[in-house]
Amino acid sequence: MDRYRQKCESGFTLAELLVALMVTSIILAAVATLAFAMGSVKDSTDDTSFKQAHLRYATLRLNDLIRNCKLVCAAVGDDVAIWRADDNGDKKINASELVYIEAGTERNYIRLLEFTAADEKTLIDIQNGAAKQALLVSGSCKRTEIMPVCSDVQFSFDEAPPLSKFVSISFKVLENNALCQRQVSGKLRGWAGNLLNSQTNPTLIVNDDD
Figure 1: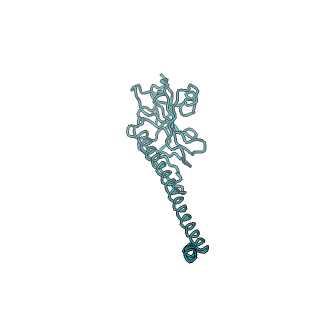
Figure 2: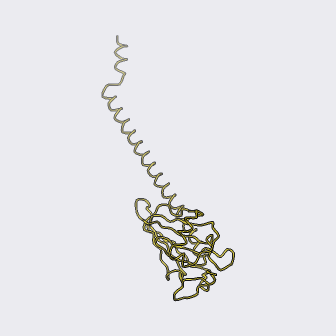
Figure 3: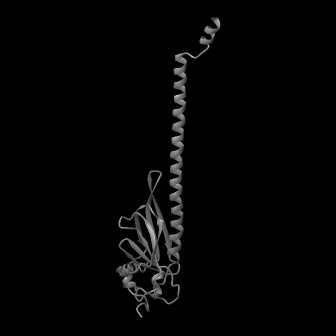
């Protein structure tokens, strides 16, 4: 009988079990909170890293395009048309040498529009938008996302195209729940202004309509 009573007395009381359960629940709640916090930090870090990678790519790609292009042909609507290079040296703008920097009607992304067609385009057609429309209809285009998610994309120039020698592209990116202003700028190294038939009313490139 004494042995049975001693065995019962050595067990946990109801109060001790309740206290143990309460302590365990507190510990589990703390662990869950810590795990959630670590997950949130990881997601935030991944998002920031993703945006930083796009920002680095955008800076390099746009800087290279602007600094090495022949001419900023026009700023039409939400696009900037760039004569990337005179690949065949004919002093004419071929469709495959054209690149459009697109911002979209809501100015919420930056992407490049390039073409594989080889036909020539006049500066006038580029300025009035006819060249782009014709090339889009032909289906010979490729779009490359530069900044897939941003806002308030703005283009600025030292002078109106095609006299521009300096181009700046500004935009905002959401980082850590705050809008950050970013900017990519470049100065044309090989500006082909000598091909313009007029500095006061530059509408054509020499021999562009031959």
